[in-house]
Each structure stands twice: as C-alpha cells, then as structure tokens.
Amino acid sequence: MAVLKPVGTGYPDAFVASVLERALALPGPCRVFGITGLQGTGKSTLSAQVAALAEARGLRAVVLSIDDLYLDQPERQRLGREVHPLLATRGAPGSHDLALGRATFDALRAGRARLPAFDKIGDRRLPESDWARIDGVPDLVLFEGWFHKVPPQAEAELVAPINALERDDDPDGTWRRCCNAALAGYAPLWAELGTLLFLQGPGFEQVPEWRGQQERTLAAANPGRRTMTQAEVERFVLFFERVSRQVLATLPGIADWTVPVDAQRRVIEGLPGAES
Image (cartoon, rainbow, N blue to C red; front, side, top):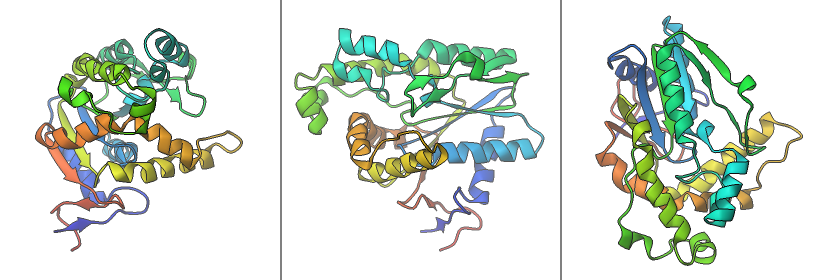
C-alpha cells in the first residue's frame, strides 16, 4: 500500500494537483467541488491548497465552508430554549443557516457574492461588512464540511445513547432525533455539488486529538483570546459523534471519490510519486 507523504503542513503536491484536475473536469462555469471528512481531517488545508493552485494557473477559486453557515448565537439560543438545550451548541445538523447557504450559491453564480464568515472563538457570525466580496463568477468553488451528503439514521438506531452526552443530556432522544431529521433539509446544498471527495480518516477515535490540534492552532493565531481546553474539546466532539459515525459508515458508498488518510493525515493512495 502506497503512502503519499505530506509536504510541510499540507497535503502533497501530487494529490493537490489530482484534486484540482478532477474539479476542473466538471462543467463550468462556477464548478462546485465538495470536500468532506471528519473534524481535523485537513479539509480546510486541502481546500486552500487547491484554490491556490487554481489561482496560480490563472483561474478564480473560492472556498466556502459549511462552518461559516452556522446560525448565529441568538438563533441557536432560541432553539435551545424552545426545543432542546443542546441545540444552542453549534456543530450538529440543524445548527446551520440553510437559506444563507442557498443564497450564497445563487450569488456566486450571479457573480456578485459575499462569503459568510463565522468567528468560532466568539461563537458569533461576523457582520456582513466583514465578509469577503466576490465580484464575477468564479471558475471553481470548493465547498468543504464534515457531513456532506450523509443520510439520516433509521429510527431504531436512535434509541440507545452512544456516549455520555446523549445519556446524560438527551435521555429521551429529543436532540438526536432533531439532528437526524434536520439532515434531510441539507439536500438543496448537497445538490450544488458537482462531485464529492471524502477524506476517510482512521476512525472517530482520532477526532478528539485532531480537533485539539485545531484548537491549539486557533489559539496560536489569536493570542489573548480564550479557546477551548482539551477537556472542553473532548466534550465538544461528543456533539458530533453520532453523525460522524454515520459519515464513516455511509460515505464510502456515496462519495464520488474516497481517499483514506492515516492518523498523520498522510494520503493512502496509489498516486504517481507516492512513496512505499
């Protein structure tokens, strides 16, 4: 089995180039290429690398993350009061502004868009005046997120809690049923995807470490602002566990291209230039 090693802190050049070639094979203009994988897999890094390579070739590329479509804190707090307290926490399906996502794609195709932006440390959507302005129709949109196209679970699968969060904070299953039901509402966003790449990590057990690395990187880039401790990260990822395990179980059969990556985020793929 070949292992393609990363260059620096990103994905290898050969892999990045292969992703761009697949994206450019889509019909234009405004090709939409999806990149999905569990938290910490390197979706944002890969998206930025592909966009940079596209721009080096004279193309216009845009990166849109589903994380930037989160409902703002007041709206999530309202859901927490009216439906279930766990809905006040961002992350799980149902915590995104789907209308904003659809409007953003419409605006990108129309050539006059602003890209939503979310401040994860402050847990607030940034004001629209701070959103990046995109003038003209881009050649490529890289739409990244962690549960693209994942189907809902069957009702019987929702009965038993799968972790301490569900056992202690959702004993009757209201929250997990809300999140599961919400998945169907994402279909219009998934319909925007011309194709979908799934970065298949080694398992959910790797996510707390990877998500902790992300938080430390966020802290280093924002001195003076409080980020989550590792203990807080480990509780936070429990909000994602059920859907994450559904991702791992279903997306290899749904995604157009599944690429396994190991715990060091090395691509396990028989690509040209891979080292054994």
